[in-house]
Image (tube, rainbow, N blue to C red; front, side):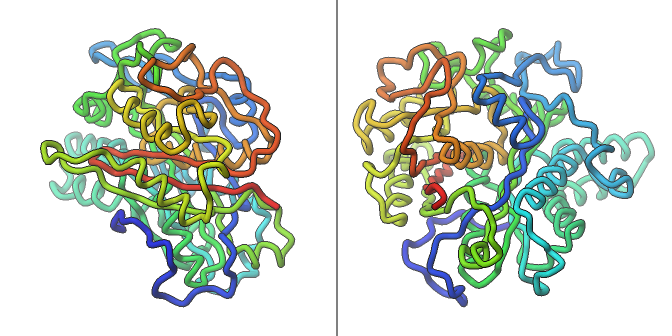
Length: 424
């Protein structure tokens, strides 16, 4: 695992690539509750279609939370080679599918790259629960080795990234970051570091899934799931009626490339990763203010931008009154009250743990491409103590979108912020 730290604004260490330009995203692959595949998902997002509904993966009738963002139309045998099906679980199959789409979208010939020129850096969080539960069930039913379940669980994330590497022949740097909902941004930032050291291409982002009884128990233990049973009233970030979030599965994987390499091969780009920073909140009971605002400000400085340069903010959107208030205060403190459009398309998917921020990053890049801001569904009006220009109801056409700020917070005090610029 890689430590979650604030990346310095100045480049330090390693052997930087010849390009001083910000790395660019050339491919996107998506698996989400409201759409399998990037364009299918994005069309659903712009229509405001939610993928949240009653849990069907297992019997949730005895649990206080009964809603989830499930990917219901995924047939793994149509997306994953048959030889890999016995070796993988649901989350890994989703990740392999997203990686395949991202690489195909990038149009890169991996066989033409030198050895070790391409790698994989992803984020993980809760997905190992399903894999671990399967191993425990095998242990209990077949009397297997006592250590097998725990060893398998501990190595799950490395195996997940390894499957993407092996299947696609990506022999370069690899890694997994575990910072919960912030992980998708942190993985892309780590991939950017590798690009700066001279690696040409990284598959990066996050896909997560833990919709199984063991995983559900962990979600419930966190105390942040809503008990609402109406999908249209369950996950309402920045609203007076906010009562928690809905857990979901899926995410996005991106192909990040050196800008000069992408230009030389004539690649189409979605945008550039211009700035990033990460901070920690102080431990509970120690005093001190939350540091999400500091992460956003540092990311803007690293990108060489001012708040006036940002055209839209993709919010973390915790769905809890206290956490929403903190985020709204951070955004208003930087941009002014109602000073920049804010959106949370994750209201259509639920919070996807390690996959959530990566999916928001994909949404930000597509918003810049199509010059439109997707909606925050089901929220009519932000609460009075959340003074943000929340895009609600329907998508908002927005000509002149040039840059987006994506915010993410993970359990344990992780804050991450990333700035992306439009292509061209």
